[in-house]
Amino acid sequence: METLRRSLAEAAQKLQKGDVKGALAALQPLLDPTIEPATRLEALRIVSLARLLAGDKKGAKAAMDEAVTVATPLGPSQKGRALERRSLIRQDQGELREARTDLALAAEAFAESGEAGMRATIEDRAGTLAAASGDFASAIASHFTAAALAAGAIPPNGDKKAHPPRKPGEPSREPASEALCLVHGAAAAHLGGDKELARAALERAVSLLSGETPLRAQALHNLGLVLSDLGDQRAALERLDQALEADLARKATKDAIATRTRIALVARRAGDLERARSQAKIARELAVMEKDVALTVEALIELSSTELAAKQGEAALQAAKAAVDAAKDTPRLLARTTLHSASCAKALGKRETARAGFRMAKEIAEASGEPVFAAAAQKELADLDSPPKS
Image (cartoon, rainbow, N blue to C red; front, side, top):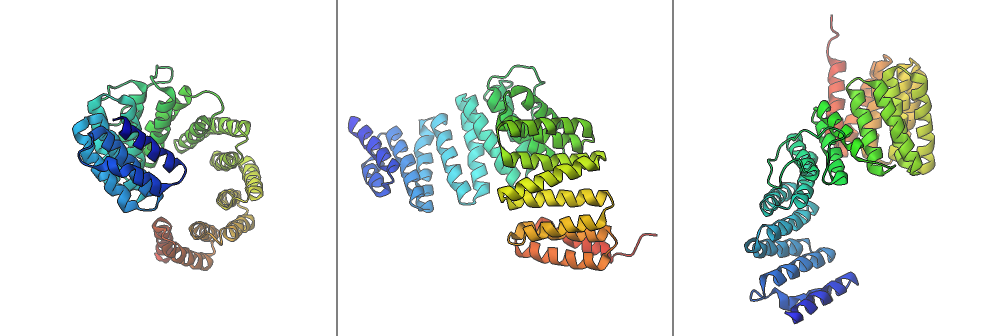
């Protein structure tokens, strides 16, 4: 047994030094089926990592397939960890459905082993993959189950469902973990159309977090957007102002730029066009200084929208054109900015300019693999071609 442990340690050291071939050679004796299962399982995990680092994704997955087989008789805890590791490899290879299946099985294993923390981690990851697949109902159930597990509100084998967040002020077993799961769950709920659930989750998350941490700033930022979508612009601006304070305190320049752009959006919704214009301009200037194209584009689109709301047509078109110019080397952003520019032309009664813009946006979106923007452009073209309503 001592010799086997030395072989594992030697392989791990070689892998840390980047000697993949040496690590695999050291592990080879440990892969024999006669080797004690727990040791063989650890060897297979390292083999999988080594092959992954060597670019052998197929070999990495094969090693973890074998690891799952070896781990299953050893009990639910070992099985869950092997499934979780294999899900990472499958996710890296773009096999999202298979990765989600592994995570579901891992969650069941940790529920059986009574490991609430591990199950919470797995459920939270499963929610992220579900949201990436557009399955918001499953994402919500996973994230809020994870939050309930972290809070200690349900046992390790508790039902998987959209558990309501605890009220602010109620106790939590793992406050930071619960808050993280709630922020993720709120995003899924917001995208899935349940704004009230998103608000409850973010209010609970904010109550669990202290200090000017990135997660607290993110929770405040997202809460501001949810409140705005719910129509409470005053409360939304209060939360976004708090998020901006947290961004500035951490010297998180890019986060602050994004928050300023959202403040501009909500101020525009509230009718405070001067504040909206001011924040959008500051965001643009800072984004240009940071040489961040995406943030520059976001700020310019918001500035254009604000000028349009203020009935400053030429200023709106100038900002829209600047956004298109900034995005010229980024097809995804170019599709969006071209779509926005065409929308400005339409709002100003320039139908033929708008038509040409929507056609261009559709072409760019289709060529760059952006079906949402392509569909939006097609809808705008259909609206332009439909007879006017009497």
